[in-house]
Image 1 (tube, rainbow, N blue to C red):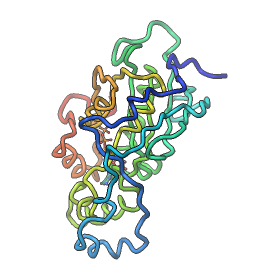
Image 2: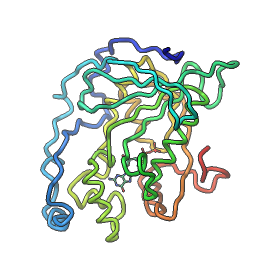
Image 3: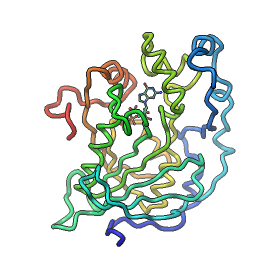
Amino acid sequence: MTPRTGLTAPDATPAAVGSPQPGARPEHASRPADPHLPDAVPRLAAAGPHPAATARQPADTVPSRPVRVRARVPFTLRRAGNRTAELVTFHAPPDEGEHIAVLFPTPDSGEPEREPTDAHAPLVRLHSECLTGDLFGSARCDCGPQLDEALALLARHGGALLYLRQEGRGIGLYSKLDAYVLQDAGADTFEANRLLGRGADERDYRTAALMLHALGLRRVTLLTNNPDKERQLRAHGIEVTATRLTGVHVTPDNTAYLDAKARGGHRLPFGRPGTEEPV
Ligand SMILES: Nc1nc2c(ncn2[C@@H]2O[C@H](COP(=O)(O)OP(=O)(O)OP(=O)(O)O)[C@@H](O)[C@H]2O)c(=O)[nH]1
């Protein structure tokens, strides 16, 4: 039986949404992994930017195609306290990624909670794929605990998690692991990307905005510490009525990574009581 999500999923997306807006990032082509890495990492670093990093399609030539809901499938999610959620797939995401949305119903009992969200601006998490953290529980990053935190909050309050196939901040799994090799030699997370000839963060949230439009979610409460997500969603016509910060999930292995995130502009609520654990 399909769960009651309280979230609508219209078929079409307004054409205006597909057009890049000022402040939006350009589309990034997907890139094949270099089969010679990691041995070739120092050579690549010396060779300058990866050609794909400098040959992106200009934003104004990106075709404007509507993103539509393709299928809605109910699942019971053990990782979300055995709540039933709908997994939603999409037709025609502009970056051709197999992104999914996970829609959690508004709780049945009592009034929907006003905090952290309300019925008109449901809680939404844009979660960038992290195979190492999300699946294997790597302690190098905070992705796994952030995913658990988001699932717990969404199971409690209802809303949507967009699981975006943006592994390694958009550079892909193999390149992320090459970046880890460089980090182990002293580079921080952003420098390591640049040494590989890639952007410090190549993620583009236009597809995420189009997915939200396809789901009828034009007003959201965003769960993130990353102001770029908020800025890009707004540039693509999503009204972010409030931002709820995620917790800071510290491990012995991720302190340098968290420090670099804070230097890079993430709002990490270090020192706020209780925020070192999922909130
Ligand atoms: N290139 C690279 N990617 C990483 C590294 N550590 C984690 N990631 C990727 O970063 C993405 C998560 O981004 P983060 O910067 O941790 O967090 P965020 O999504 O920007 O911000 P929040 O919404 O606050 O979680 C995932 O795709 C991870 O695979 C790293 O050292 N290098």
